[in-house]
Length: 326
Image (tube, rainbow, N blue to C red; front, side, top):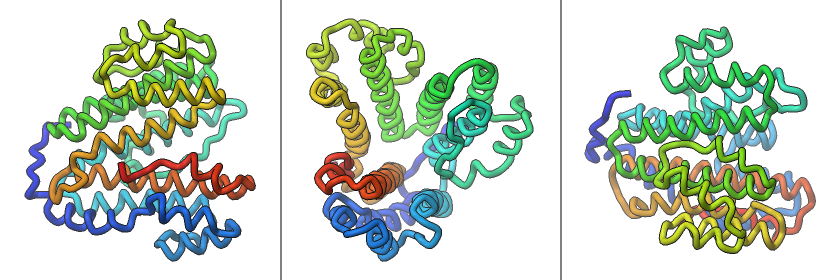
């Protein structure tokens, strides 16, 4: 993917359109109406009033909203290459589903996202023409194909995630956008932190081998932190902003053996990395922030609907939601 000149002026139309749409993002106050709905059916009605296509049910509505997001940004943003860095996550969902089909007890159902993955890449994947796949994707698929013969679903996921994260950082750097680079380096940092904490909880140091290259911290940092007592892990990251995310993860684990706070802290940290463009009027940063906030909105809606289906109290549902206004 060649380097790009992301001139803000070329994003004038897209930025204006997305700045207007960003005001309609379902933030926490608006999501409270969804939480307060007396039933899932009433919640879906509220979603319909908010623009979601709910005719075929909740799962289809959420998948369609992600599709609509990418159809929109691909239609109005001049440089598709920058958007494909985000769309890669959805492509890798297809790749994961492709290889999971042969694994016992694993689901092959995933949200379909960016429309650009529906072409020759998926055709080559299904036909086993791995050599025809784009660089980066090809290496991931070939390693997954070899591993899928004997590995379990969690190992396959970890392997593909490592390839995805490193590839996103490389392609973000090709764009020349410091905003995209900072965001995707942050995704690597937080993913590696998650591997560290979850591996420590299982006393599984081998989990560290699935960490991705390309973050702001060397992988040796995580290996050094792994044997530290739980209470000392956040401070082991020093002044790095990841220390605050680590603190939320450690607290959640020590107090309730849950990594929910880590997951929320991660999503809010990543949105915060795009905070510098919160009040910008032009540029790829505006597009990036809209994509991340919209995808987080859909994640929040999914959490609310799942919570209501499970009969959870409103307070229990709300504490799991991500704040998109950071």
